[in-house]
Length: 65
Image 1 (cartoon, rainbow, N blue to C red):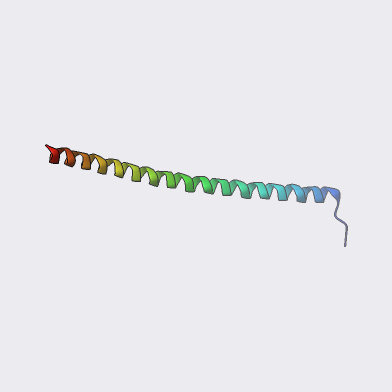
Image 2 (cartoon, rainbow, N blue to C red; image 1 turned 90 degrees about the vertical axis):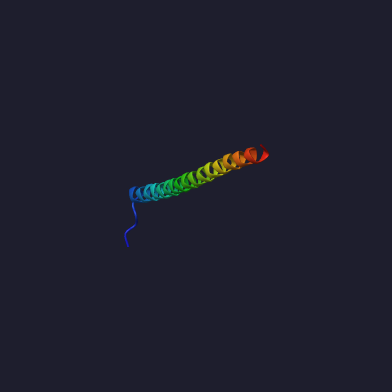
């Protein structure tokens, strides 16, 4: 079997490093998308609670008057 040249070994190392970097970038992007969707869900919950608090405040004021 022929021995691998230094150039081929270097190319393999570079390709492996690019592959690892690409995989890490995809993981980070996926985590960002998940965080964005979770933040949107939390924002919706906060808005709903805010509306509920306003409604309750109005009812309480009405009940006390």
